[in-house]
Length: 360
Image (cartoon, rainbow, N blue to C red; front, side, top):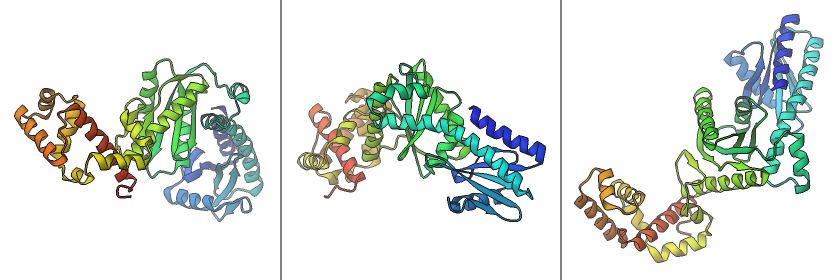
């Protein structure tokens, strides 16, 4: 983006003319522009002092280090870091220049804020067209969307890292929504977008030691209405995975079926169904071998021959296991009706166990 280029160029110009070593820090100590790379102890101290700066105390200074707070209109904080003995007038001049370009940088943050408000249905319908035009958001473009749930990472810090790497063109967007990062991009083919996302996640996870809980890919959409529905659908899938304790790291919007219904069913109804179908304690009696057998049997649509082949066991061994499961659960999952009942009961058991309301 032009604004980020101008910030970097301004720092380099100050270095060339006045021999000033400086850097711009984002939240979490992320260096977004610099003429030098701070050593670990300096960066650690700068990050700590940066976090203590406020509107009332917007500057930190010692013999070697000067840190100036740069506050953004929409809540984000940055800081200008200067090392060495630099006259105050040169520091202030550089600070004012960087502030101006950071305001320009906020224009891109404004695009992300626009997308955030759009997805949350906070924009009045009468304003959507004008806002789309203002931020260059072509209303009829085909777009992909993905939700990245972070695992113990600072969402704001990761937002800045991802913004720097993902938003390399004007048709890509990112915004932070509570516990999730939403990335959007124009695409001609659905697979192209998700391939880009997969590569992007692999690269950031490796380079920045990010930890993702899961990534949900939404359906490609055309138009703002479809984009909002695609986001809400992907959000529901993310909620479903959390409520049922599904550990899959990458999941598509179209993978959950009955799981999505179970996750949205009131817990009171879930408990009533479980009480009349199966004793929840039987799930604790099923060992890994039997659970693997059940999962494979269901994945093969109750086909015993195909299940035995995939489990590398004789068909008679499989029948023995299925009969053993029937003896424990009281349900013969070789029969369609009992298989459906067991599947639903197990999903409900997983949901209630995850929410710790099984005995409620």
